[in-house]
Image 1 (cartoon, helix red, strand yellow):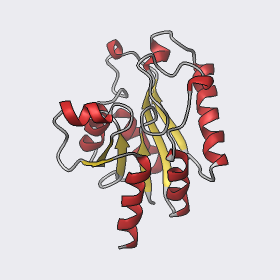
Image 2: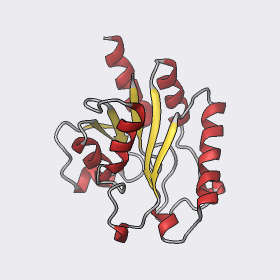
Image 3: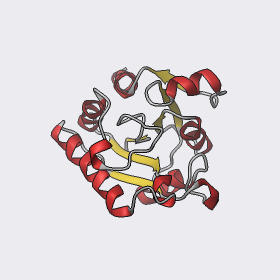
Image 4: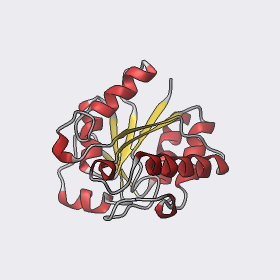
Length: 181
């Protein structure tokens, strides 16, 4: 199975330091939904792994999170793409759970649900925690410079093997170029 793991905020949609707290605040990054569609057309399954501590902090509830994800699914479908599943951590950092990135819990759940070894699976994110979780589970960490990506590149030591792209569309261009080669 060909699989790609994406972070949500800052990769698929515009990020906010105040959190995305409603469907109205969820806005796709230009080209991101079309990039997902191109992955699907090339035979990839696309899943999202996202920290959503706004739930644990009481900034929004599960119904709102589900509505945000429903908007994301609809918008992706309208662009000709499909997100197969969304794996999320609703806990605040203080909870100490294993599912909050940079811990590998979400990635392990993806591996178990799809019965797939994650070695070499592309994992695209905009923060060090995305890349760390990817690296720890054997995924191929890919940084996009949208969202927190520029700050991450500038201020963090990236995990070994991390490659850097302007945005999700550019990362997908590279994956599809490699597939054809």
